[in-house]
Amino acid sequence: MVNAISIAAVAVVVGLAVYYVYKEKKNGRKCIGCPQSGCCGKKRGGCGCHGEE
Image (cartoon, rainbow, N blue to C red; front, side, top):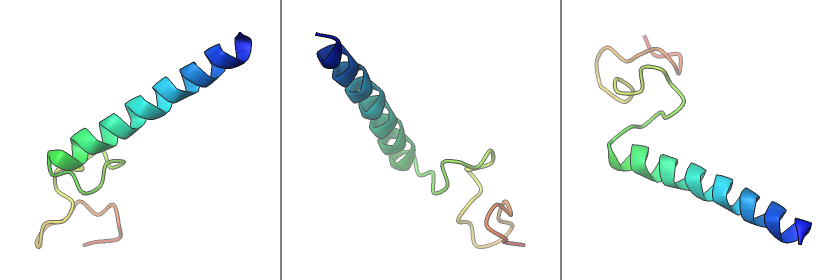
């Protein structure tokens, strides 16, 4: 019984993480981990999170 609860808890956490990544990518975020992820990927004036200047 404890194993089933543990597996269910891990499945819920992984499912929520996958949903979050899907939702952010659908909104156009290219760099989810950046605090300024809305600016990543622009041709000019990137946020600098990937060594862009």
